[in-house]
Amino acid sequence: MGKSLEKMVGDVNSAHSQKNDNPVSSLGPPRAHLMTVTKLSPLYLLFAAQINQIQQILNAHLSSLQWIDQNAAQLQQKLQEVTKQSKAAQIEQERILRNRQGSSM
Image (cartoon, rainbow, N blue to C red; front, side, top):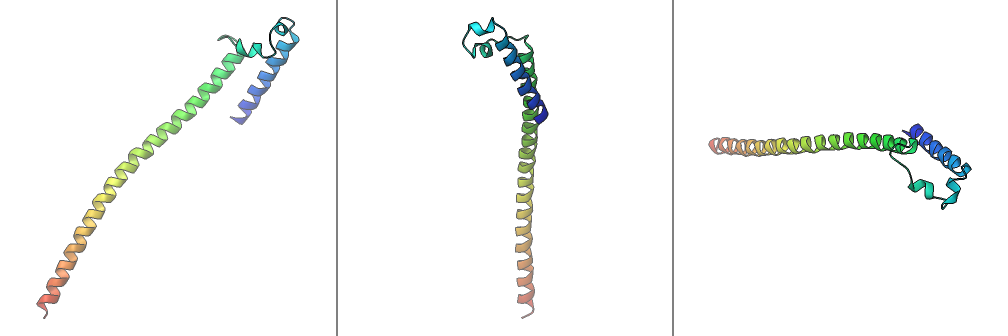
């Protein structure tokens, strides 16, 4: 991704210097050419490709976070069940222990 961004910056700088060498582009304000990127220009296509790549990465991260959230909820439910069973087992063991102590007296 870093190399792609470096290439993109180089392409933008190259496009910028080509526009400044063109006498027609020097008629407007210094940054006017940045506002006139059309959907068919190489600069637009480059930005669109970069945005698409970022979107894919963010979608993958979102999917991972949703999976983690779903599994965390399931794990929480299982933990509550185990805790409930553990408490019930502890109460039963204490009852048995009291019965044994009471019958041995």
